[in-house]
Image: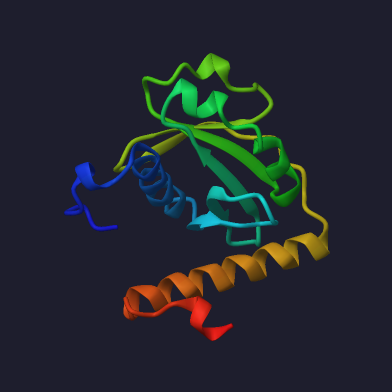
Length: 154
């Protein structure tokens, strides 16, 4: 998203995701937002590293947003590392110590704590890389052709 997109047009979680995506590029990770790894799950940010690493980042804009999330543990089996992304005002002591932590705003972020690495099995990694590629391609198509709808193809 360009900087000229007003912060007033983005929701707080979207601002966090933008800052996270920008920061991940400095680590040679590319990312997509709102990816569905499995039915009933939708991750805020999935990042793909230069060696095929899969990271999932959940953006939480406030205490209530975190407390309402009852699905996050279901994301762990779909990534090598899991992170929370929050702003500087978030009460980080609420977040589990055995997860990663990223402090973010709409412009950048900082990895404060690396999540533990639990490597995906090769077949699961292949599935996630394919989901990432398809998701990114659909988003790119939609950016090139705003009238495009992937549902019309199926």
